[in-house]
Length: 330
Ligand code: PBG
Image (cartoon, rainbow, N blue to C red; front, side, top):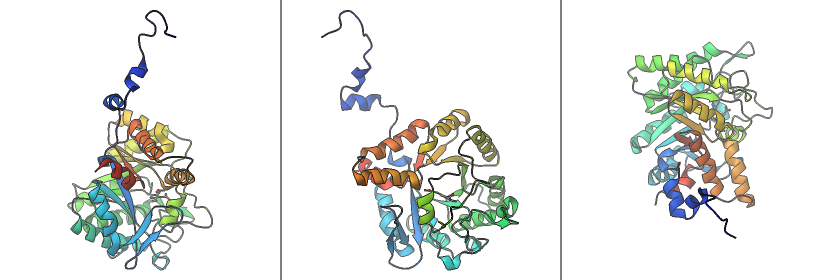
């Protein structure tokens, strides 16, 4: 039965009537330009290895990187985030392999930048792939020593810059490291190199599958609470971001992403700076599992990415990057 009279004058459903009109009035959209793909490299030749904790994600030996990079190029993903799976015999207490100019990351960078100069490459600055205990910093007197760690991180950042890294991404959460990295880069004529600071990195429970992927997962859970942010906090993220921008960061990363939409939104409002989000391994695995069980459908991937964009992220690091881009670029 029709409602008599002028009520309701406003019918919001008029804008939802057809797909075309929904497309016209949509406030947010995903483009291939919004996506960054994490890529795991490993030693050896002719190896493409599945990762048990992250179905669908693989580790590639350097000679096999073409397999994934060709897709990155085809589907027009602007940047990859490179992560090493360091063999146990190259790990030690202080993560010295991070400074080896012949380590996996350095060798990969040289080859990728030569073959695919058009693809941006970001690298983590942190020691966790290289330390036996899986921590991001150096332990002195049972504590992760902030300033001693920075001494190594600045060298690691410079080395990555020299090898061709485009975006230096400190993910270690030491205080003051962005400023020191900016200084060493500037001093060595890398003043144009971007710094993407993992400024707001929470001590999250959702990094588990990644730690397995880079081989830093331990039988005893690694506790990073003395350097990564407390999951209960929000205002503290303003202080982190303000400091990192002052120290010379160009872009800010919030991590994890989906669980921290409120933080992304607040930071975007306040700082008017490019904010990126990392949809982390645990978030990926949850959705992947749902799709595998058929309790979720593929559209749930889009929903998770659009949520990050709607919150204010300009780009998203996601293990789904190829799957999404495939549907966007034809
Ligand atoms: C560590 C680092 C982590 C991730 C990226 N860099 C995990 C950690 O803090 O242990 C996690 C990414 C993910 O879970 O997908 N420097």
